[in-house]
Image 1 (cartoon, rainbow, N blue to C red):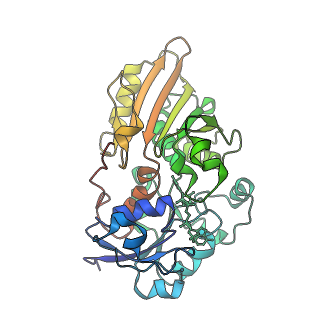
Image 2 (cartoon, helix red, strand yellow; image 1 turned 60 degrees about the vertical axis):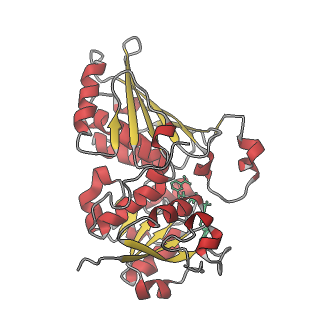
Image 3 (tube, protein in one colour; image 1 turned 90 degrees about the horizontal axis):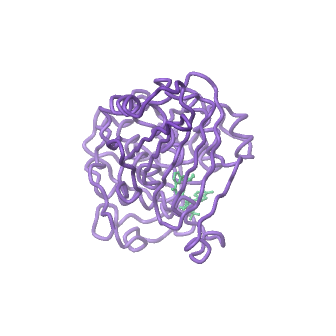
Amino acid sequence: MPKSVYHVGLVGITGYAGMELARLLAQHPSMRLTMACSRAESGKRLGSYYPFLETLPGCDVCISSFNADEAAKSLDLVFLAVPAGTAFTIAPDLLAKGVKVVDFSADFRIHEQAVYETWYKQTHTAPHLLSKAVYGLPERYAKEIQKADLVANPGCYPTSIILGLAPALQHHCIQANTIVIDAKSGTTGAGRKASVANLFCEVSDTFRAYGLVSHRHTPEIEQELGLLAKTPLTVQFSPHLVPMNRGILSTIYADLADPSLTLDTIHQIYSDAWANEPWIRVLPKGRLPETRFVRGSMFCDIGLAVDPRTKRLIVVSVIDNLCRGAAGQALANANLMLGLPVDTGLANTAPLF
Ligand SMILES: NC(=O)c1ccc[n+]([C@@H]2O[C@H](COP(=O)([O-])OP(=O)(O)OC[C@H]3O[C@@H](n4cnc5c(N)ncnc54)[C@H](OP(=O)(O)O)[C@@H]3O)[C@@H](O)[C@H]2O)c1
């Protein structure tokens, strides 16, 4: 039975992803944040902890430690904006009590338990849920998400990369095993917890690569690109940290499947493939996307180039890591799971500066 207002909870309210979701929920017409959880800030009023929420819906919620029994009493859905290795300890209890879950972490994104355990270096304690979880990329899996009780919200880098490569793989424009991804993220991508590596002086006025050949998003990217290509594949994925607060820009290279393919042809394939997806904007030929133009939004902007000398396709894909890459996408998934239009509460974009 559809409700006029759904009550939702958020575990991880004090993190960057949780903060962004609190911002979005405050303007959602059909969802009310009635439980907000953090261990460190338990007992504080939400509007006092986040002054930007003051006077808005949810501001009087008292931050609490998570309790599944309390959640089950009144909540329709809980967002888990917690680190990997935590969600699989919380989600089973909620699901057993009939509460839907959208998990921001990688705990339910990887279909194969062994692959998860190899890359995340921990034992998965709820492997029976891996086959039930739906990968929460609305443009790919909207129908499955509508029926799901557990959605694994995609990673930020994978979101930019999968959306950037889907038409090229589905239409066989590129050789699937030649993909090289050079991606850059703002520092909110590393989370809000205190660490020396994320101090202002460590991240400003410098630019560095990290996680080469070992970044944990690699198996998720390979899983989803492999499904698009209908064949297992490996990618080279090199992430970088740039001195900006938010945003991801992925520059992706791949050898053309047919050296005679032109930019005109591939641009038309991309434009047709994403024609009915309002959040994906294929830019006109000759234009390249920038992170500032998708800030705080659900947009994924895509620019294309074909190098006739090297016979490579180059895709530049940008998203906002906190909105499209985390909280906004989680909200889109929750909308679908609760029977609402996917874009409910997500129409507005944040200011540019
Ligand atoms: N930041 C991004 O751009 C981004 C993008 C996509 C996906 N994600 C994913 O979203 C999740 C949250 O990321 P974030 O960047 O917001 O992290 P964060 O800033 O480090 O925040 C983590 C949150 O989880 C809570 N938490 C930590 N350990 C917990 C535990 N054992 N039990 C219960 N709560 C716990 C923390 O609050 P207390 O310690 O007070 O409980 C905090 O509110 C992660 O899985 C991350 O990979 C993040």
